[in-house]
Image (cartoon, rainbow, N blue to C red; front, side):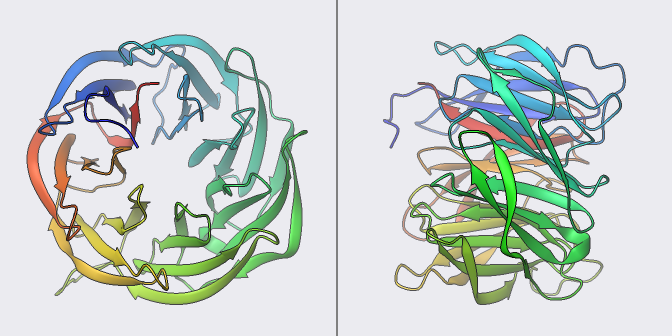
Length: 346
């Protein structure tokens, strides 16, 4: 767990303005200070979103741009201050809705919503993304991809197919092969979007975009099997309109889960039962307009949520006892902020 004196940095990627805002997070009061702003190099046309991925050793940041030619921009992170230095741009097989590294940091995994595929790109020293080594078709609208904590299996969502895809992962070669069964279904028309593992790697929390529900699964590390335990709603009381859920996060201690919903511009907070891992609602907090991306700092003290329409960022204190959110401040960032990554410098 990070110490109170550690330097914490937040990166906010802004699709329309084609840049990244770099902010220092004060661990004492949650205040944010802009320390740099960097334009994504080599990008002629901004994409609709700019997903980010962090290497496990916190030395490199990767930013995917969803415009042709499909590109991932690589940066080295200065361990002294968190500033970014461009390393190289890499080729992607399609526009990616989500990128992440495997647990070793040797491979970049991608999920393409428009291409209905998942991909693997090797990463060569020093943090240089190579051309794709594997491209696999999935059910419609792949939306997220994540290696399990043991780096033995990979899960990927397909929003249009209402399934979670399951793959064996060879951490030596970076090869994905379909597990059996290859998919786990969710409720029809739910639209599985993003997912997170709990810190123990024994449960998975999945947010569904189209009905704003959350599914809780038990996860068997040896087989990569998912067993459904619970489904509940992330919508606020009195909600009207079309649900449009976006992101889901869990605190580092595994006690609280948060989810963003774009139509109502709210963050839903849930308490995790330590015995069953199931969720109970804490409440809803208004936030920036159309909150696509948000993140929790590595110490579990603060939550930062970005609004695609407001072009702003809100910082919240997470109450350690109740999990409730208290807004501490609002900040303007770039246009269409859609992804937030927070690190404690190594």
